[in-house]
Image 1 (cartoon, rainbow, N blue to C red):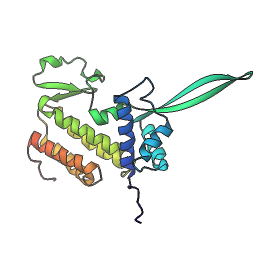
Image 2: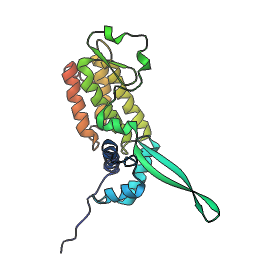
Image 3: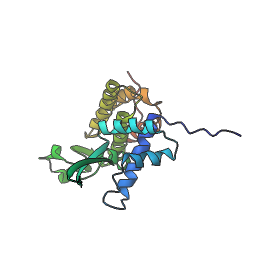
Image 4: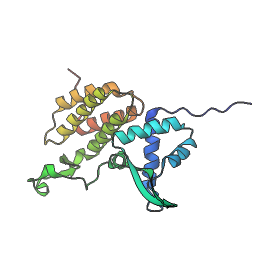
Length: 225
């Protein structure tokens, strides 16, 4: 008899599975607390697809530490005999950063950075997120770069220093897209620095889409100097 083996998941895949589970709970609630499952419910759901509890715990903790998931601790008091006893229960809910991972940025984010600029008088531009004024034709690429940046920050295949470097390169490209005349050389140099992570697991597919999006937006990228 052939022994069945469980599928093997990388930590990045486990993080994404946790986020997807919590996102679906948030997107389709059946009751007030249904979007906030407890750890045992999360572990049971992911065990069905072959993810071990140790992987769930360490990757859930990572998502909490980095703000993708919110840990909600509720304290209740009950009486046992003549004593009052406090009990805590912990549940988990996807955070705004996790929601953006699936849906992109919301138009309801703060936009203080555009104060003083009458956006309705600027032809062909829209505002995205906190203070990003983007030409209409660059909006899909800008959102794609957001997704790329989110995946860079969430992966465990890079050090924190590498994440900061690569995230800065993404922001450089987005900054150029906010200008009336993006500098192709600056974008080319930033993309040249990002090419090094194009083969990192889940980053590879998004990186290819980003490259295509850049070339569709500004033409062929200049060769790195």
